[in-house]
Image (cartoon, rainbow, N blue to C red; front, side, top):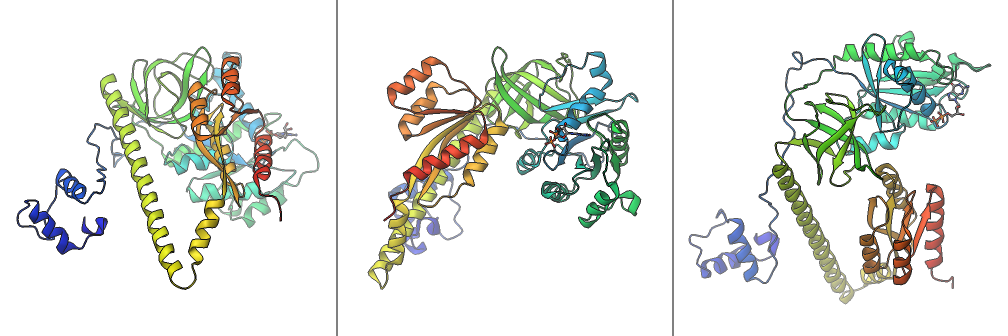
Length: 490
Ligand code: GDP
């Protein structure tokens, strides 16, 4: 406490004795309340970080999985742009026995399950690409057992192929290579394989452990072999899941759908989800109203590694959020409250720390200025001249909002910079307008349309709402807005 308050220990001890504490020595244990009252005596604000509310956590993993039933592998498709990831996903979806029966009408819900003639299943993540993979991983959500690395036979190893290899290796996820577009003429499969070798992809035929399958996502050739290869790999990995006990899972995609409310696709990782189950993800809870698969078949149960779209969320959870089952609605609400309070507290604490740091820096700068140079004062003055463009970001799905945040963060920030004061999934709302008014922010809306009422309210308050349907356009426009704020050249 003495260090935190920057008060010499002996003075703090004396003060505490004056306040009536007995036998104060450096090992004296202060309760949070006592510490707070001491801090207040010094006219400082105490920070009490512990929130004693209720929360729930995932259960510890069993040490021995061998007694549990096997589960389908969860597979992510990665590879260079235009090498056929989307086409491959589409074709794989159609290979499902179940999809065949249902007439093959499928919806993009973030993940889908393929039922093979053998009765085995594979779960594919529906969003190809590295951003989704690493975003999930960054949030600690393990949603991939196997990576399918797509390499177009007519193009070979390209920069994003190399990037995908890096991601998969960093995550220690085994790879199966799908050499795609094998229906094309004049392709050199051997050259592709040699290229892979140069990036330390040791294929089985070269004595390594990585299988390679020649496919055509377009004609469907080789897809059954690819699926069999995945299933064999999964068998060797001996993937097992626990269908009993409280549900644990992860949100893979979430959105607001007109007429259906807040909808989120999740992968169940443990337990079995059923209608009526109460689940919590981040700061949102849900009483499962309806659940269905990508063919819009209503499901009564969803077990380990099964993707399922869930209706009944009170708000939109975030992709990558851990999903946990609560025993009751009361507990779920309590957990949400605890988490919200904790988040608020953390925010306040961080804000305070930043403020204190700034104060200390200013003090230091003043002292230095009194000394010889005063460089830091100048530096700080320069910083405060930096212009900031406040923006509020709204998007149709979590994925696009996250991609935008990343891209905006990567924009050059010299003299002027964009600051995202708020972001979210869904249409522009009245509360966004309030926020925009308070922070003098522009609202950038990606792939979402707001109604006339909001538009006229915005106009009345002088708030600009800009709409885009191409990420690139939004970024270009933002770059222009920032450029306009630059001071004229002298
Ligand atoms: P992504 O960017 O990796 O998702 O690639 P796409 O799936 O969008 O495919 C890019 C282009 O390659 C499209 O024009 C596809 O029709 C084409 N394509 C994908 N797979 C094959 C294939 O197996 N054979 C041929 N000939 N073309 C393919």
